[in-house]
Image (cartoon, rainbow, N blue to C red; front, side, top):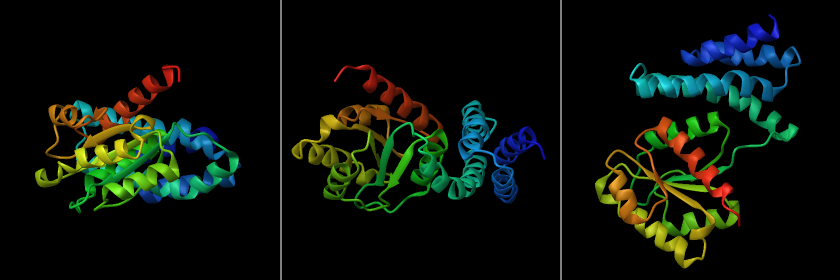
Length: 220
């Protein structure tokens, strides 16, 4: 196969969520001497962006997004260490976790996959993440964005508790705060003092890019 055929194959097979084919093509590309960043930026990321666009148009639904994301995640398992070795730069660091009292993670995991596919470095703290764990992780990793996920209405107040903890630690101004989850609304995000909100994974990626661009455009 030519390099162009491999790139086209990666794009097409990621789009339909054919994980075995994506993994095979990734291996073929590396065996042919292709740069990992070429496969990432010229095939995998554009394909996942198209998945997001189709979701927003109503042509794709959550299952299609999940299988496409998983197909790309398989390729990323192979490419990630190689990309790190070549010094490929990421868009930014995104720290993510489901808030204390909540064990739901399907939505969070989908957002993580889409963020990583878009070029973010994602640090996932998992579920049931207490405010002090978020604070410690922000201190350790110095992320550009921290994301709080909640699926239950009863755990949504943890958004404010987490933001208060960041403020108390003197870290609030150092990070962009995004919130999301099934019961969350823009109004609620505004009320707790979050910087951004997204109703779905595709929007979350676009909003994260917008917020990051806005932050970097402002002189320190």
